[in-house]
Length: 199
Image 1 (cartoon, rainbow, N blue to C red):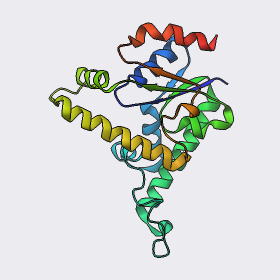
Image 2 (tube, rainbow, N blue to C red):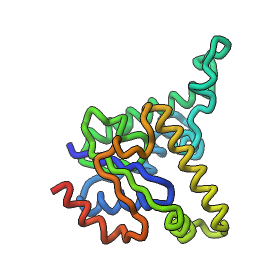
Image 3 (spheres, rainbow, N blue to C red):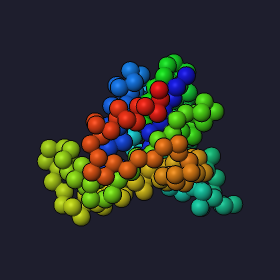
Image 4 (cartoon, rainbow, N blue to C red):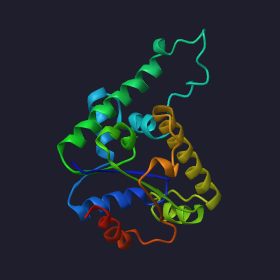
């Protein structure tokens, strides 16, 4: 089974790259579907699951674990762990079903025994700001400074989540098979070249 995982900085175009690569290779693509399935299985709202998976790992661990703190008795910790457990099951099921591209969700670590091809997508801040502003929802008019703060906040959340569950540094090139800088890059044009890695 061929599994490709895509880690990405916010605004780098990693989601677009993953989707286009899956289309080009004619294989399955999983991204938001993972959140939907976790929500279904845990009976939590998709918005809540999205916040847990993308931005808010359990905030009190591991720094504040001490004699007076029992994480297992904390309902927030239990919910966060339940979400991660379901995420793990779902990703393993997806990896067993067919060749696929999976975006985010610690898939590179969770499926490490399946030896996925691990991609990380990054770009400079200026191009990320431009990309985010061009795709912002209607009515969201953030200044460059506000958009930069949003990008940094989301990246920080992703890094914390990834590092909390994997013990690895998010974005460290040593953890990936292929890192691509999408600064000023037309992702659509780049995908056929990237696809040659899988010939």
